[in-house]
Image (cartoon, rainbow, N blue to C red; front, side, top):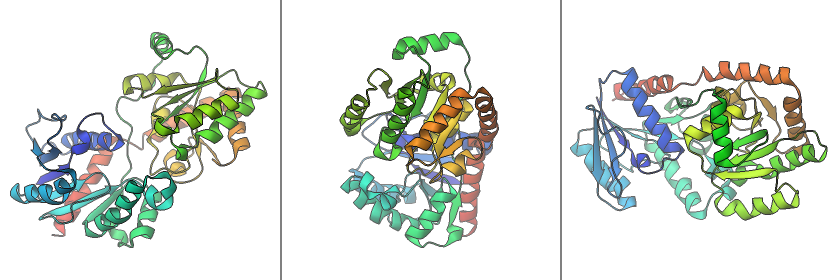
Length: 372
């Protein structure tokens, strides 16, 4: 079979969708032993993505403005290349195609929380995601939570939606080498034990309540720790900076910005605690990344996060600052609880691996093609 992909997300610095697609394709090459051919369609404004040395993969650059690229240039190429099925890894699909179509909808944040989206994002997703869900032959979602939300939003038949979990990137594992720890302390300029957060610093990530909970513990002299916040802050930086100053946490909170994966593995591994108090997630990859690195986890008891974390994390009401503070204090003061969570985390991540994700995705492709 010949599978096509909207692979523009593989160009340049990869976002979460880019990592999803790159891990998916590389794992497909492993599990299906090159029985299929793959065409990665990219735009013409950037260099070649990965996979260019694989014989079963063709990388094809299409020259066209962005909107015409997806809805005109890509469909023409799919027909010309006689593609059997096209997979759009990020929410929207071409309006019309000559082949079968699969779309991945990672979340429906635009519908549940439009206040967290720009006007352009909201208008784009409000209309185009519904069209993609209706026209695609199958929909892949990252969690049962998102599955229910897509059903409520689009009214597509249940059999059309397939839950396929994301997985931990192979790079994430526990590191115990003290030399690596010293390297990270020098590079990111910290010396104390720390609590870690990983993810873009966005209102839905609930950083404000997390900082207030941390402030409670610091004021009661219950912990000597600092906070390391990784991820881009963008236009939220001043608000976070003002809050840190008002809580008298300037010397206790460090914003690291973007951190490459090879450093992030170590930051996870040497953290005393990882917290992810998000108010909404379609999956929540950092939760299982932290578990894979042997770090105890606190996360929210809403959205998809209980589904992903299982019984391997402490779940808290993300709107309850006191509950969050108590959970952090309990883990940091109770070594037995820490060890229990670490062991449960190692077991939990065994449920999430990319070969499994690839096999289940290929099964969706084959099911769609059999219904031709």
